[in-house]
Amino acid sequence: MFTRIIIGLVLVVFGAILVIKTNGFMDFFGSMDWADRYLGGGGSRLMYKLLGILASIIGFMVMFDLWDNFLNATLGSLFKFG
Image (cartoon, rainbow, N blue to C red; front, side, top):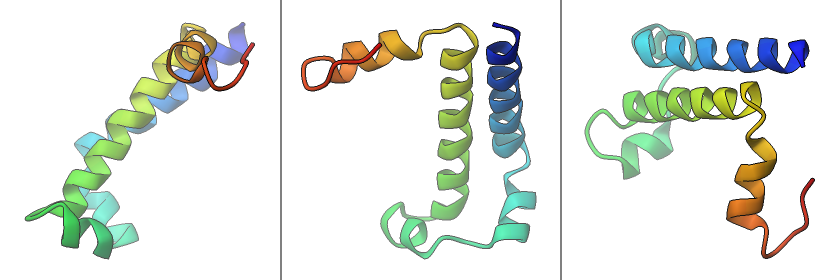
């Protein structure tokens, strides 16, 4: 239980840093050609922000043990989870 909380907290913090410090990540990793082409102006920045939000959401699901419920609600009719 403690490990799950730590892993979730690390994901939430990483996602928040990715959203807040997008320019730093862009300087380090560079722009994404796909995002610039298909997401319009500022596509790479938007993609980094979306990845950060996704990481935070996954972190909250891990932290509060909602991962199995999420998979059952979305893919439960196709696959059997937990």
